[in-house]
Image (cartoon, rainbow, N blue to C red; front, side, top):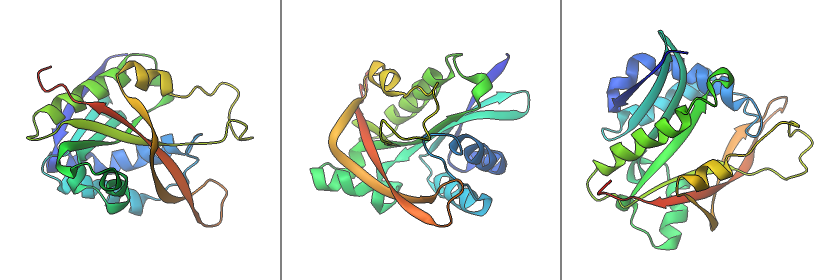
Length: 200
């Protein structure tokens, strides 16, 4: 596959926002998020990232088709629910660059694109003054969740291999509507963090 990677900063990503909204809905519909997405909400969410002048969008394109994307922006520009666990730990928000999501269509997995997503976001974070940490959060499901596919493989080993450490005491709660559900419900997400080597 001839997949090319492009990186957009801030509002430069605007022409791709509708494609990215559809991609998020498609990928997050699967386990473990089971997210019943809504285009209007998705576009508002992505527009908030685009408004941050120091945000980054790393896009994977097969021809003109967006097949993957990873996002990030300074934690100071994020919503309070994401910021709160860092405040409670006594960390400075201005020292953290937050990675929003990394989504990739199944046919393009296993090609090393996940590493390229992290490489590009970390490189961008190094160019933002004052950043000392990168971080993200991920939903947690029970090991015996009956909706868990037999071939499901968690990303913990991949994240650990990139130097990220699971935080045993840092969580946030975000609401979304699951597939086949009638209403939005709260979901707990755990944070992972990595000290940023600014000399890399």
